[in-house]
Length: 302
Image: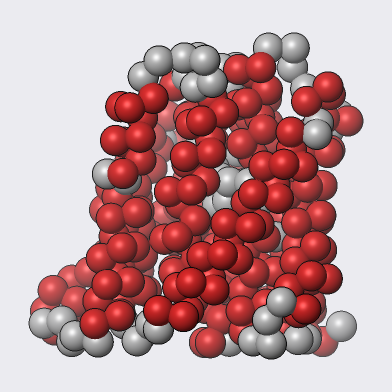
């Protein structure tokens, strides 16, 4: 109980920022919040991913094991989400817009969760994110573009994703062991420090705080997959596949993350209904305030 309380207290400042975003949401126009999200996507989070991945030496074996782990977790979410097809919207396109919430993840919350973990685990989170982002997006684009054209342009967009490029650059520096010049690193570190607070404020500002009241069978199933079934499966299976407790802890926390806060934007870009994905994002984020600390406590006991 004491360890769970300490985890909750360590996450409380970040939860307060989400709540503050909800309080001040009407003080800024939707365009300003959209601009903040864009700044995070193009500048602040790439800086955070690069700095996090480059400041510690990385072994190729770590990349291989983390990559297999996060890809397996997302693949399981992909498969389990498809089992709910009969409960979802009649249109496959609209279903795909919601289906993606079963395997995509919230990058800001990932770093928040990592901050509550030991250094051996938190240092691997940026590697996990860097390896997971392109696969998560390829799966989502593939589902949403089934039977449609434009796949090439979408894949180009994925290949030039700032999160992917920053992660690959940071991992490359970590593998090389090269020490970067002090001044550029300090500038990037300043930018990276703003990424999570700005993202949490935006999450709170754009979230539907009453979404949990609209949980139906389909939404409950998708949220159960993302927040309960995936981390539970990792907890049971991963210790039999590796004897590295830090890797198992990382995979449990990664699997327990709420879904991506921008999933509805990708759905809308393909012409799918944005409303249900938006509701699922809010439900996943709010419910994870309860489930994520519990899974972090499980991971810390390994």
